[in-house]
Image (cartoon, rainbow, N blue to C red; front, side):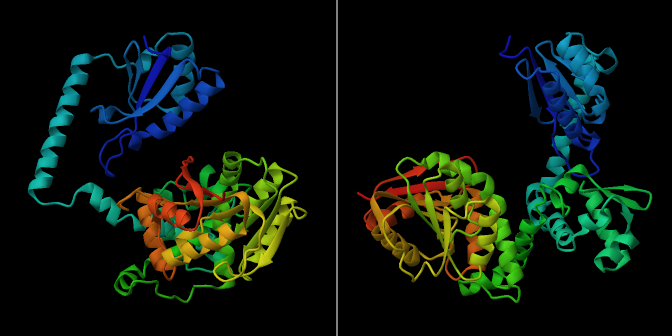
Length: 451
């Protein structure tokens, strides 16, 4: 007997469109319903819910198995979940109408599926066809561009409580035929629902993409739409070795979207960084390139005795002021307009922060910032770098390697850097006790201390 009373396996093996699979039959909806029902009935400590790969019974999906008895269910729908949880997981009695116990038929179907799959893969290989993994990566821009265009046009807000393509086209001043094509693609991506000629937001798109929603991410995601245009210049950037300027660069709208995008990432991460670093002995903080001020705001809220100073460029500081004022910490967070590559930092700081900053600069620029930060810190003060950290040969993690390319197309000389590089630069600037602190998520901390 395992550590849980029941262990559920639900197939979530994705397959190309048109091929029978459990996800195509709704297994993700079943998985979500199971998770909610198990929590609602207080069975979290008794039931372990696990996704799994193909079980070879795709035509009978969604398929799930309940252990330790090994009860197989087929064609499970979200509407069946309450009964399964209540009757089987709570009372220990399988739901007979959904149980599949014809072992010979199940084995025969699974074996047949396996042989067909192997034959198909062999034919695919013999014909020299592009592997699905490569094909999906190459075509990955299609759903991405569809969603970004919808965000740029504010499609989801225009859909509102429901509307047809003509009405939505009028609201966003766009061609009705083209809008209809985009709306249908969004339905295919699971971001809209369609009934007759009318479209409605899904709960997910209504929550994250509609203006006025508490969790609306549209403004921040528009920065990703801006990045798209820069990535289109990558071929020329690789040839030249630096970014290719485009018309969308450095406009007020671009800057506002950029700061909103940074705030989207930082607002939840900042309290974790504060907790990790602690506030004991911290009275003065310099936040270089503080952007939305998320990290200074988090420190101010964590400790009333902390005074933070944010240094950023003239285009950003007014936006920073909006976030600081909204957070209600104007008494603890001051703003200074300047250029961290040239201006004097001041002195006597307990912490100097560089959150998602170093990747924008060259090695030489970072070395100079570290040297001047060392001079500006009080004894026992700390320089804190938060960024994507590459492994020693710079081939991973994948997000950090791809982000390095983002810096190629977006900056003059920026890149992602390795732990070795950050450590070497800090020690060369005079820092001691340099260490890496791993955090949940894609970025890490490198911290150096002044003697």
